[in-house]
Image (tube, rainbow, N blue to C red):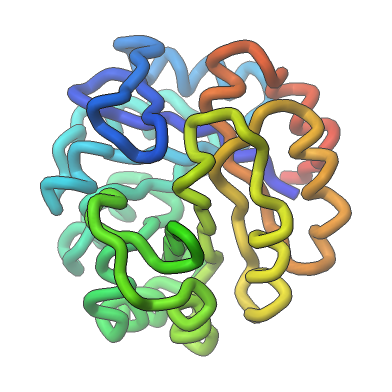
Length: 243
């Protein structure tokens, strides 16, 4: 199981939001590249980066910060936030990003996302963000009437690398991962699932690890790392991450 340390970007700074609320941002640093280097030194081989401003604007807003992370981090960078065109996807892949996360586009233009997944095998991740079981979009500012599992199943034959499942009600609040809902989704689809939202400590990693066989590829953690509640090296060791 892969541990993905998260670097969320707002105005070029490293932040964490509570429940996706931009007005509830906690700033953890102003040097994203340095943060990426620290995660690498702790053993991280994967990063999850989000351009939060881009999620709301619909286009890249923290390009310089993302480019600095890609340059500094020796492993694989997974990027989301405002990526909604072929030019966006191919531009970031050319810039060294390993995987592109698409959320709003997956709901509003699924054929486009499928085309990108077919054109770039193993490079597209579909974000399935949930609020009370329904898909949320536009930086979580809007909630649709589409059930999470219905959206996920639309991409089963498209070559999507993974589904990123976030329980918005837990994100950034250290309430613990919604293991039950995450595992339920993984069991209902043939695409690997990445857990996200609410990681509070090593117990969340321990709770998810037995479900790797159910299709849990990994887990994203942010605030627990920044607050010192979770040791990254210990989390990686517990997850049994392999290169």
